[in-house]
Length: 448
Image (cartoon, rainbow, N blue to C red; front, side, top):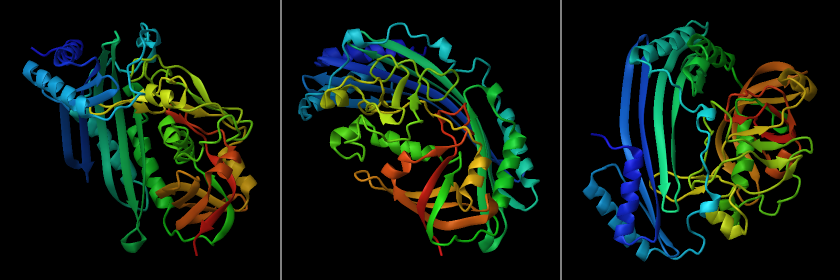
C-alpha cells in the first residue's frame, strides 16, 4: 500500500533525529506527466512518466547537508538520514543557515482559494492527441507553411509536501494542461520557423488548439524573406511575447543571493529609481489559477503580495531566510527548492504596470525602428548590466511593419534601458509574468 506524503515526510524527520540531526526538513514531490506529439497526421511520440522523490535537509549547528532518493522503503530512508548527517558533519560552517522560527510559519493557508489543481479527470491520451492533430492541421493549412515541426498536447499533475522539525507541515497539488505547435515556412536556405502555445492550470481555460496552430503557421510565414537591418541607433519595441525577458533581468539582479555575493548590477540601487516613476512591479503569489502561485514558500513561510518596484523605486531584495540573514533583512517568503538542494530565493508571479496605449500606437510613435519578436542567446554582464542579444522581428517604417528582419544584435545597458521603458497595454493577464510590449528609445542595432 502506497504511503502518504505526510507519512513519508515524518519518517524522514524521525530518521534524521535518530541519526543525530539537530534540526531537519523533509520534502516529498510526486507527479505524473503525459505528452503526445504528432507529425504528418500520425503519432510521433508518446511519453508518460510517474515518480516520487524524497529530499532531506539536516542541520547540525551551523552545518547542513541535503540528500535525495526515489526509494521510499524504510531502510532506504534510514540510510538516507545517516548519510545526510555524516555529510553535514563534514560540511563547512555557515552561520546563516537554519530553519524558520515557529512564529514565522504559515498558519492554515487557504490553498483551495488558489485553485492550483483542476478537479476534472486527467485527460485521456486520445484527447491530447486530438489537440495536437488539430493544431498541426491548422498550422499546415496556412498558405506558405511547408511543414509542421512539432505539435504537442500535454498534461501534468504534481504534488509537494514539506515538513520540518520546527513544526511546519503542509502541501498542495498542481495541474498543467498545454498545447504547442511549431511551424516552418519556405524551403532550403530561406526557411523560417515560429511557434505558438498555451499552458494553463485548468483545461477549461486553455486556448483552442486550432487557433494555436493557425497562429504558429501565420507567424512562420510572416518571417519569410527576412533581411538584416542597417547598423545604427534606433528605437526598439519588445513584443509582448519577449518583453518579460527584460523584467526577468531585473528580477535576477534583485535576487538576494546575487546581491549577497556582490555580483548584481543593482547592488547599489536599493531605494533608487530603476524604472520610470509611473511604473511598479508587483509580485503576487496568491493569484488563482496561475502557475506561479503558492500558499507558502519552501521554508514554510506564508507568501504575500509585495512591491518589488514601487513608482519606479526599487524597494527591496527577493530573499529566503539564509540570504536575508546575510543582508540583515527578513525573508520575503521567496524560498524555492527541489529535493536535492537547500532553499534559494526565487520570484513568483509578477506584473508590470501597463500603459495607456496599444502596441500599434507605440509603433506609430516610434516611426522607424525594430519590433523584436524573437531573441537568441544572451550576453548580460551581471556586474554592470551591459546587454547584448541576437534578435529577429520586423522593421518599422512610418509607424507600420515594412519587412521581416533577422541576424541582428541589439545592445544597451540595463540601467538606462529599464529607466526609460514605455509600456503598451497588451499584457496577457493569465500569465505568471504579466508584462506588456515595451518600447525603448535609442538602442544600438548591429546588422549590415
